[in-house]
Image (cartoon, rainbow, N blue to C red; front, side, top):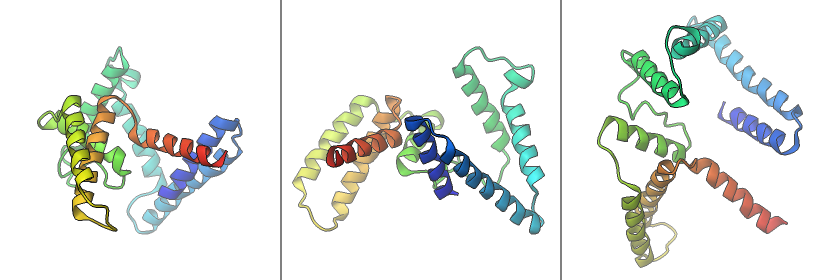
Length: 197
C-alpha cells in the first residue's frame, strides 16, 4: 500500500506538472485494488466485507461533518478542525488499540511528518513544547557540538546530535506551518535540477 500510495502521489505530481492524468487513472486503480484485495482477504477470513468498509467510511464522514450532514455549525475552517478533532477523540475513547494520544500517531508515517504530529499533539495534551527561539538556540548548540566531533563511518554521539537537530528542525517547520516532508522533497528536486541541467 505504501508503494502504491507513493506511485499515486507521483502521478498527481506529474498531472500538476504536465496536465496529463493518464498515469493517475492507473495509480488510483492500483490503490483501489489494494483496498478491494485486503477487504476480500478479510471477508475470506470472516472478519469484514467490502460493504462494511464503504459503510464505515460513509458513516464516519457524516459523523465528523455535523455542520454539513447534521445540526452542528462551523463558520470557519478552524472551527471545522476543532469539531473534527473532538469527534475523533470521542470515537477513539474506548478503542483498546489507542494506547495514548501520542502512540495513536502511526509509526508508519515518514519520520519528519510523524515528528511534527507528535510535537503538535504533545503541545495539546501535555506541556507546551519549546518555542521557536529555544529551538534556534538548541540548533546552534547542537551545531557547535557536531563541529567538535570527528567524522567517522558511524558515531553514536553524532547520531544523537543529528537526531536532536532533526527534531528541532521539525518543530521549527511545524511552528512555521511548513511541511518538512514536502519542503525537503522539493529541495531534493532542486538539487537534482542543479546537477542534471
